Image (cartoon, rainbow, N blue to C red; front, side, top):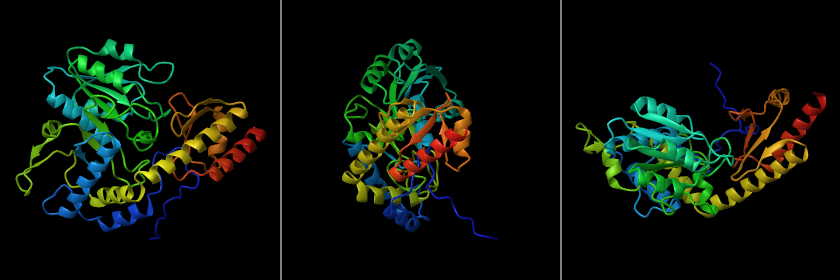
Length: 354
């Protein structure tokens, strides 16, 4: 059978994944068959996982972080809701989220039998505090904020959400799956050091340039991990707090290698380049008369007529839309100024033809 070849990233403009750093790719191959889910047997990769969690804590203002390398943001978000539910005394727990949350929270609520209460966002596309507060009650176990929304790259008012959660004796989770590797180089208030955050999602396999899968789940205290733990009687380790059991060490090792190569200066340089590209293409699109959502983080949303979107997509640009139908351009590390210039040339050609 002919060997399949994966597509390149040369025309991928809407993905939140990117090419792994060369060191991360090589480490993933070396540790492919190890299992961090059995830490006493696979001690080297277990030690690497501890290093990854420690570095993630440094990035997110948490001196003594607890957590692990998950399969991705979906697993980490499920775990956050699961921990909040398990630690809550509510008989019928609910979670209050802004409508900008990732769709994984719908999965989490369904799997865990938690009532998901969705508040509309404000005109700035961030969580609306009054709308969120109107949904919080004595049965609220979890309040969620997003630091780098999937559609518009917005950062919710995390300190204010922390106060809302504290007043309700609920837990606060921050989903920084995509934004977490850009936000350390901005002036946003978004992490454990800025507010009383209980748990966080932050994914090395997105802007962190680790190999897929390498998500991240962080918790402020050990009690959260205890709330997730189950006994593992046939392993040397006595309990396991992860959602999956057997896990490939590839993600762990690749994250550790990416951190060694890039934290902090490489990530700072990547963020500055990505943000400059986002602002450049946003201005170029606005100059062409399109309605553009300004890029707070390296993500641009632009309102293209559907025929034009389809025509550009036919030229094999890998694109995606927001729920409202806008084109999302995610200026990941693999997205260069040359790629964006080529995209604009194709856009102009399609527009002229239509």
